[in-house]
Length: 173
Image (cartoon, rainbow, N blue to C red; front, side, top):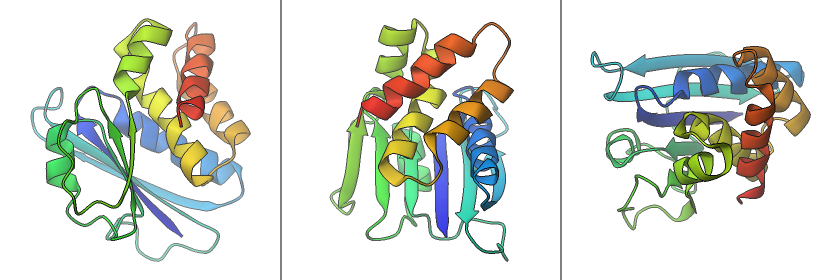
């Protein structure tokens, strides 16, 4: 079983990213649950999306001790990083996260938003870049299932750019 927490600020597409990750897991024949929460500010306030992926039935739908934390902002790391497992994987977006406490042992720093802007032309694709990165690091879902789930969810006309964003994130590690 793998518990994943995707965190950042409202408007970064993390709820959609969580839904896509869960759908990719299901497409791979695994069990998955996804939940979300965000501050009353919605855009700009803290938000998180959580996904549990398992080969067995999931008995409790909430992430209690994440194996992986994606922190897209400093505020999200400070707010949602407290219960990451001791050997858990922390993926930070170096575009917005500047200070990583020493307690985190397994840190992967990737300029996720910067890559989205430079390679795809818009920061809007950062959530998809992040999904590519997470998939490469964890093998929690297959790349093929993830790509299919992305293409089923993104707006028509953006498919090629989203495929590129996924590839960029996958190769960034």
